[in-house]
Structures are given as C-alpha cells and as structure tokens.
Amino acid sequence: MKRKKISRSLLAAIVALILIVVIPIAINELYKKNTGYMTIWGAADVLSYYGTILGACVTVGALIVTILFTKKQIQRDSFIKNQEEKWNRIESMVSSSLDRIHPARIIEIILKVTSSNYNEAITAFNLYSLQAKTALDALFGYLSGEDYTRLEPLLLDIQNAAEEYCGIVSKLDFQYQNLELLELRKDAIRINNMARQNPAKNMADLISSGNFITKTSSLDGTEIQAEINKLSEQLSVLRDTSYRQLLEKKRSTFSEIQDKWAKKADNMLHLWRN
Image 1 (tube, rainbow, N blue to C red):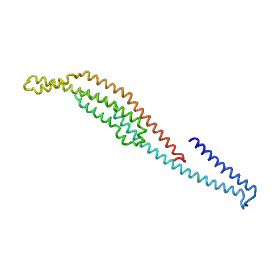
Image 2 (image 1 turned 180 degrees about the horizontal axis):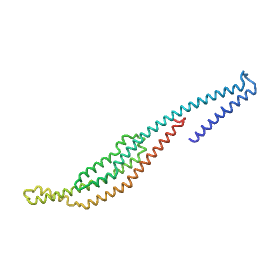
Image 3 (image 1 turned 120 degrees about the vertical axis):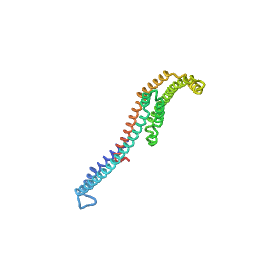
C-alpha cells in the first residue's frame, strides 16, 4: 500500500513537471529554430494560449476534485450515522443482557427473604433463571453474521457467566425449598400433636402428618442456612470478579469496534478509493 502511494505521487510529480516545465521549454525551443511549419503567431502567443488552456484544465480539475470530495464527505457522514445508530443499539442490548444476569439481583432476593415468603423467593429465583437464560435471545435475533463474529467472544463469556450464576440459583432454590419444608414440618408436628389427643377420630391426619415428619427428619435448618450463606458469598465474589470482567470486556470490545469503523470512515475520504 505504501509503495503504491509513492508510485502515484511520483507519477503525479512527473506529469506536473512535463506540463509546467518541459512543454513550455519545448515550445520555446521549436520557435527559436524558426524552421518547419511557419505560423502567423509567435512563441509568446502559443505560450499564452497554452497557459490559458492549462489554467482552465486546472480549474476544471479542482472543481471535479471538490465535487468528488464533497460526495465522499456525504458518504462518510452517512456511514458514521448508520454505524453509530446500529452499534449504540447493540451496546444497549448487551448492557440490558448484562443487567439481567447481574449477581446482585440474586443477592437482593436473598436479602428480602423471610420465613413467611420462602415461596416468593423460589418464584423469584425461577424468574431470574428464565431471564438469564434468555438474556441474549433478542440480541441474537438482531445481529448479522458479521456483527456476531465481532461480538462472539464477549457473548460466549456472557453465556458462560449466566450458566454459572444460574447454577448457584438452582442450589439456592433447592435450599429455600428445604426451608419451606421445615416450616411445613412445624405445621405437621402441630397437627400431629393435636391428632394424638383423639387418635380414632383423627387417624388420617395422624398418619399423613407422621409420614411427613419422618420424611423431613433429616433437614437441619442450621445446615441449610450455612449453605445459603456460602452460596451468597460465592455470588459476592463473582460479582466482584467475573461480572466486572464482563463489564470491562464489553467496554474494550465496543471501543475496538468503534475504532475500526471510524478508521474505515476516514479511509472513505480518499478520492480514489471505493
């Protein structure tokens, strides 16, 4: 590319030298010999005529260059506008996807849990998992093949992170189901104690509550809470490590993409490039 540019510059310099220096000297030398075809005008007239024609050609050439440059400028401005609109929308969609998988959303659910709303927490966990697993669906539908290739490393990292976070959510969901079973076990013990007062009349309640108490006898609230705390700590670590790394990778990826299309836009101003 550099060699081609030097060749073009050298050719332009040679042509300019011929037009400005060689041809006027040649005209002068031809008239100095005063031989051959004789004209009624002199060398001064020919040089004046040549200068006029050369000046007109330069003017026309400058006008053509101005028109071509203006056309290139309009094409560049249109290209920049389209690229900005497209990539701003894509970046907004990626940011939305990252927000949907944010570990802080899981931590927020944990902090709001009380013994009276375990079921709400379980529902919230399921909703998070659904949103995280489908976070990139809209983006996949919008991206072209070329755009996907540019974003592929970032999107794969987001998918992997979403799977990791959903894995923790699944474990939390299991633990909160166990906490809910412990609450139900308390009710079963109460019902069982009441049924024992009149076994003949409340035999069905006595049997069903007894079976439930037996099935849930291995559950330990302290162990369950310890496991929840452990998972919460994992989420905090992931928030400060992998999730922030995703944010940084998103920033660097879009910065690199912008640099590439901005360079392409600048190259559009070269007159002899398509």
